[in-house]
Length: 143
Image (cartoon, rainbow, N blue to C red; front, side, top):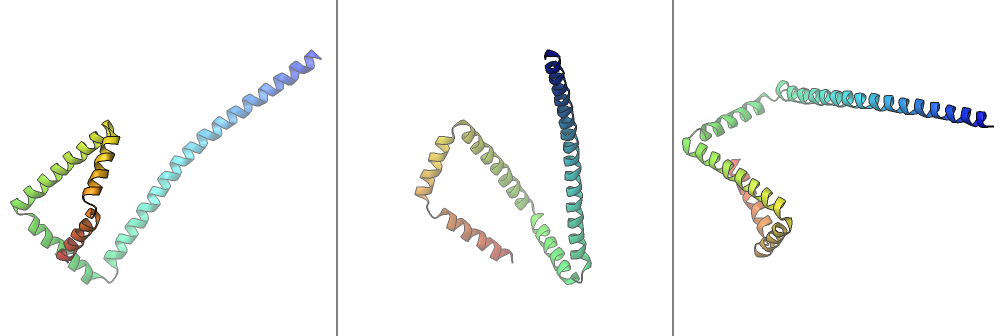
């Protein structure tokens, strides 16, 4: 009886090792296939973007495209003044500092930052509407 049990145990272990080896090979193959699938999806997405861009340029919309390019030229000519460039650079740097400061506050004490946000919401309850109104005014001015 011991020889039969030992044989069954050996067969079971060999089968288990074979199963684990197959599972590992399948897992490696799946991960390689996943990478290939991501790459294929990326190239398919890029192809769709390029086709959409070509359709915008090649389709009979030359008037709209020329008007768009003329608008970009006007905006760039306004942007080239020294005052505007300095103002935008300063705005970008101050926004970067502000975002990093808020991130540091949130990392150090999220409770305090949540309390400050709650107090600011109580003090300025209409900030969202005012912000939306300002954005709409800016959009109307740029048309």
